[in-house]
Every structure is written in structure tokens, then in C-alpha cells.
Image 1 (cartoon, helix red, strand yellow):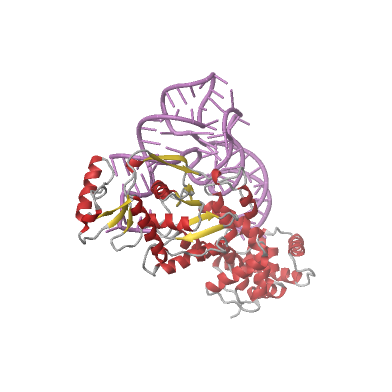
Image 2: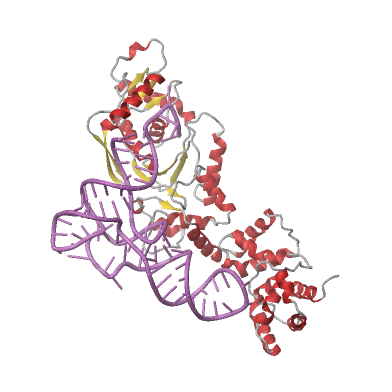
Amino acid sequence: MFNLLFARHTGGRFLIRVEDTDRERSTASAVQAIFKGLDWLGIAADAEPVFQHTRANRHREAVADLLALGRAYRDFTTADELEAERVEARAEGRVVRSAWRDRDADQADGRLFVVRFKGPHEGETLVDDLVKGPVRFQNKELDDLVLLRTDGTPTYNLAVVVDDHDMGVTHVIRGDDHLNNAARQSLIYQALDWTVPRFAHIPLIHGPDGAKLSKRHGAQAVGEFAGMGYLPEAMRNYLARLGWGHGDSEIFTDEQAAEWFDIADVVKAPARLDWAKLNHVNQQYIRNADDARLTAIVTEVHRGRGVALHDAALPRLAAATPLVKEAAHTTLELADLTLFVLLTRPLTLDDKTLKRLDPETLGRLGRLAATLAPVKDWAPPSLEAAIRAFAEAEGVGVGRFGAALRGVLSGGTPAPDLASALTALGREESLGRIHDALSPAA
RNA sequence: GGUCCCUUCGUCUAUCGGUUAGGACACCAGAUUUUCAUUCUGGGAAGAGGGGUUCGACUCCCCUAGGGACUGCCA
């Protein structure tokens, strides 16, 4: 239904055009979804959709020209006749031919007709593709495609040619499922004596299993990546590496990609989407992302999940995010890793933690709390040192009470290392949670 | 059936006639470690098959196999 064309302007900018010959307006919402997805990706700033049906008059003008040139003809073939011809053509291993191609159109007598392009039967058509290289088609293998339907509306293959010509499109870059159409479209350009644009047919992206990426629209899927916890810049980087490479470069900026990119370097074979690698790339970007931005994203995720966000907890969220972000592959995971700071006292402890809280450990945690309370600089380095010193003073390893302390602080939800967890929670909340465990409310 | 496209580690890719075929993700092993994760070190892993061309082919040509697209009054 849609075809996204990326055409390079002389100014070096891209014009993104959504084609739609469908007369139903319901498609508008789908177009919206596409642009929303592109906007999220950050690549559709000055794009504008063009609806083909609004240009139907211009398309019909072009057909009138072709008719006058003798490069198109009226075809009165009925549906039954067409079907019979299809069966016969397939059996004979040839292309469908219309009986009206060389007949005099005046025999019309009011019957319905379509207008077909009159393609040459001799010679070959060369599509010098920027990605696939020179591809030759024997003209006799190309059937006469319909230009205008019985109701007078233009078809896709006519509309793209006319619109692209009128808009001065120089490069047509699209999925390689259109490679066959390129030959037919080239013929139309030539018949109208228009300049044929450069074509570049890039391979489609397949799913992890090698099959095509589901029926959903690509852009709609792009929107879903946001909800799955991926950063747009990470998506851009990962997507750029699918079907294209620049030496050993894996992580690079938009500027570098723009500088390095050459359509000639695009790989010919379809690539599969690999979630594991996407996660890795996303992790790298999360790691380097601005903390305030990540905190805002994580806050939204929690809110979306219905997690209670108390005013007192928000600063803790901001403190926790930078401390755990290196371990997160997605912002969803980042939310999981920060959940512990949002829990409200007294925490409901998990069974594992409960089991660890024997009298000995309880006593030790009490002494630890007393040790930590006066720590001056409530930050990872000094807290780390304090915990170590405490373990040494107790004559045991951190392992003897570490797991229990974590459980008491997080209630069993994922939490970072002890010093980071304490830092994120803050002095008051940390000590409070420990004391809650020491003297559980009845 | 016909036309066209594609084929390097499991995956994404580098190589553009001469390399021990490189990197990344994943995987395995080890180290670190208070959980998970992170981090560090090491390891296994590829030119679909067969013919050519050439002093020499992953690179060029042909064939076969496999995968895909098109074959609509869909786009």
C-alpha cells in the first residue's frame, strides 16, 4: 500500500515521500504512523506525505500523451478473457498479451476498458542499479502494465513515474522487491522522453528466522521499538549496520555515518534482525546517554507500569539511574533495575532474604547500621570503604551479610552493588529499611 | 512454469586476485564479584557445491543447489 521513496535533492537533503493510490482515507492514519515512527527515529524532519489520488489529473494527462504517442492503448479485454489468457500464457511460459494491443481502438462501442502501456517487444532494458549493478531485462518478457483502471484511476506504476518526474526526483532508493518494476517504469520514462532516475534497490530486512519482517508496516514497527526500550540513536546505529558496513566500525555517530556512507557499499543480500546485537548497541548508547534524559524516560516507564511514584522517591530515582545504567540493555531493563528505590517502607521481604535473617545476621546488620549512620560522605567510595572496614572489624567476609543487606534494602528486587544501592536510597531511607528489618512491625 | 535478485563464522559484516580470511554480537572457558548484570582474559566458529580463467581465487566467468522478489484494474 505504501512505498517510501528516499530521493536526494541537489541540496543534499532527502525528500521522503509516501505514495498512496488508495482512494480510501483510512490510509491516512497509517501514513501518520509512518511519519511518527520516522520522526521518532529523527529522520523525517521536513518530510511531507503526497497522496497520489490528489494528482490523478496529472496522471491522466501523461496517459493522454502516451496514447497520442502510440505508446499506450485501450484494452477492452473482459475479466474472463484475461483469466483465460493468463492460464495460456503461463502454460506456454510467456508473458500475458492483450488482443487489443494492435487493434484499432475505435471499435470501442461503449464497453469498459483499461489503458495499458505499449511496451516494445524487441531489445532489452538496462537498469543500472546503484546497489545490484547492471540488470538486463528482455523487453519481450515485460508485459503491458495497466496505466489507468476501468474507472479512470491511475495505477501505482504510472503514478510513481509521473510524480517522480514532476517532483524532479533524481534517485529512487527502495526495497529490492521493486527491482522488476524498475524495468517497466524505465520504459515509461523513455516513452515520455523523460530522464530516467538512478535506481538503488536495497535488500529487505528479514526477521531473526530469515522470513520477511511480518506484515506490519515498517514504520509502525519502528514505533514499537520505542516502547520496547530502545533509544532512537541506537536504532539508527544498528539499522545503519544492517546491510552496510564501514570496516570494523560498529558504534558511530550520525555524522560519521553520513560521512562514510556510500550507496555503493550497501550489501546486496537481505540481513536478519538480531535482537542480541541490537541490545548490545542499545546498551552502549544507554551507557553514554545523559542521566537526566534517562531518568525522565525511566520515570515514564514506571508511570506507564502503574508504579506509585511518590515525591520522595523521585530524587532517589534520579540518583539510582546513573548508578545502574551500565547494566541495562534497554530502558525497560533500566526501569527494572531502578524499581527498588521506589518501594515504600516497610518493604515486603522475599523468602530468600527472610531465611538469611537469622539472629546472628540481624545483630550484625544492626551494628552495620550504627556504623553507617555517621558516614560523612554518603557516596559509593566511602560507603564501600565503610562496609569493608565493618566486615574486617566483625572478622567475617562481606559475603556473610551482603546478600541479606541487599535483600533488606531491595526486598528481593534487582539491585546494584551495596554501595550504589545505599547511595541511591540515601542515608535516611537506607537506615530506615534496615531498621524495618531489625524490628518487623507486628 | 517464466523473468529477475541473492549466497563469507549461528547472526551482522571486512576483504574489492596474493591475508594465519579480520572485527562485532552471540556462545564456551577462566578471572573479578555481596545477587543478577557489568568488566577483563582466552577459545571454538565461515567463503553452498562443481567446473573453468589465472603463476595464484572468497574475490572474475559458467553450471547446479538453496533462499527470495515479481509474474494484479495491490502498492
